[in-house]
Length: 175
Image (cartoon, rainbow, N blue to C red):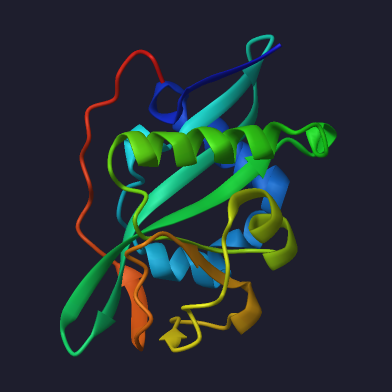
């Protein structure tokens, strides 16, 4: 049975190891890492999937912004979503995403969410689209059709994606 727990209750070395297995050790070169910068994930929106005491999945959400002419429009970046390779296809990723989206809604942080991912998957299951991201720029290569967003406050304006000040929200035991 899979149990979801706050990610900050898991040894960070175990999370890093899972991310390496899921994405490879060169994952730090991905544009998403550059966008997030050196900041910290939003603890209240980041979770781990545990099965029989073992970490089998994780999701992190990050405070980022769309920056244009010195003005920052806050966004929450969803991902990475990592699932142990032997458990991929078991629905763990979908469950983690749903849990993170529910937590974002509960904390009023679901107005402007974004991610880099497969538009068919994230559109069909979670309502993410590229409808308002056409003028966004990223600090690295990105396939424009994979730059996705959802929420009423997603800006439809030009700008550069980048890190912003961390968001601190108390994590409750019911996560």
